[in-house]
Image (tube, rainbow, N blue to C red; front, side, top):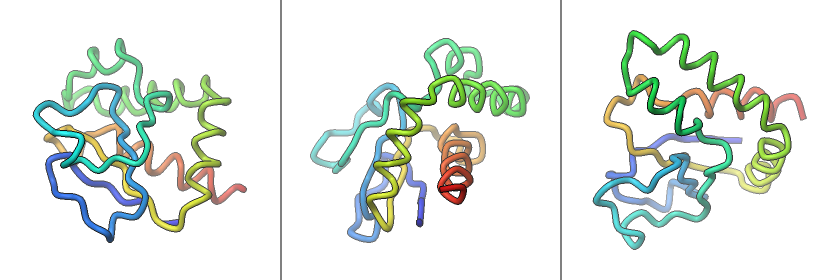
Length: 120
């Protein structure tokens, strides 16, 4: 299983495979035609309260990672459904809007999903 990451502001490509928006809110200024989203995975994104608390502050990164993984663990049904969806595709690309590519929840979700898919 190949899970790639890409900002929503980058053009879609055939190499992206199945494109999944992994943000709770639609990326500002991105049209649906430009985004080419195949699935919007709102149920596995950070909660609004966690997202607002983090506010893309790199100093909160480690705590944010722990809290986001805890949220994923508490949403077992949604995560299992999401993993089944991923398992149906050879290549998926998680699409996200954050400017900071080193401190985005998409990285956490990518690792979490890869680890969980290896268990299956």
